[in-house]
Amino acid sequence: MSLRRFIVPVSAFALQGCAGLQSALDPSGAEAERIGTLTWLLIIFSTAILVAVCVITAVALFGGERWRLSILLGYGFYLMAPGSTSARAEGGLRIEVVGERWWWRVTYVDESGRRIESANEIRLPVGRPVELELTSADVIHSLWVPRLAGKLDMIPGRTNVLTLEATEPGISRGQCAEYCGGPHAFMSFYVIAMPEDQFSSWLSGEAEDALAASRDQAAGQALFLSSGCVACHRVRGTDAQGTIGPDLTHVGSRHSLAAATLENDVAAFVRWIRDGQHVKPENLMPPFEIFTEDELRQLAAYLDQLR
Ligand SMILES: [Cu+2]
Image (cartoon, rainbow, N blue to C red; front, side, top):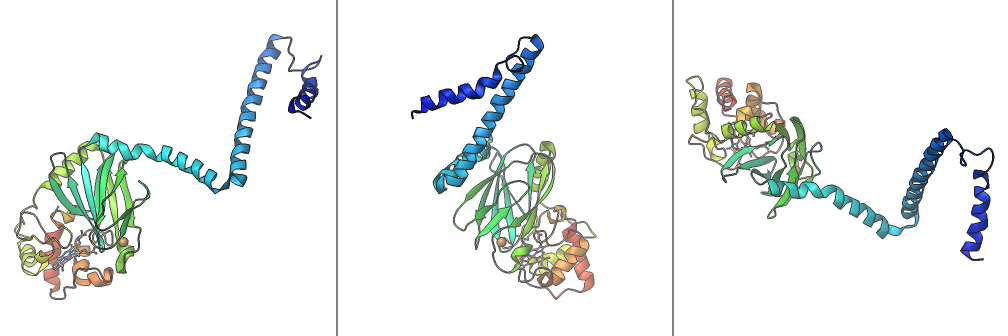
């Protein structure tokens, strides 16, 4: 039997009910006409949805791997496309983030190419896509801020670009998402999204050298400069020019210490210098058991005012 010979009698039979003396689908009054229009709209739209659901279900059940993946992939490209191109178009600020065992070296490169180094915290202007150039100094790490974007690996010798665009001001937490040895679980950081004007004044403050130590902090600074800290740490504007560990020029103004392991206050500085290997086992800063309690407090007070 041909398809037409089958469909014609069947649909004629099915539509029988539409005509007739008592049918809403055969209106002969203004009110019934409006109801009729609504009814047909409802039928057409719900049929379209039903057909779409059936097609998707059929593809999911019988479509085979390739079909299913291509649909998902096509949709994925469409969904993820805007982020990757918009930052390049805007130009301006770039942030280089280097994964180190077990902390983050963060360098802001502004419009004029000026490099401003910091660590363990990423600040972003709200509402502007910013490119993060990710790489690693040692093993493979991975940067993940679940509230802002997907994760992206940091691979030695290679630069991966991740675009972040914060839509509201506030703090989010990020984590290394690729096991990288020892204290990997303590390799976290904070992302602080700020309104554009606050961000630019923060960045120009961050570019400044460290504040000169006040008379109260002079003892702490002298300890810092004479105890070997300078081999690994830089405090811009002083003789401390080490680059192995985090830049400490403005360490006192960061949201946390040692890659979000400790809060940031005087007591935390004391704990870090005295018990760093206990707080974050196997981290690459050697233990310092040479200081008296008084000296520890002086050192901590000096670091705390580096804002
Ligand atoms: Cu890691």
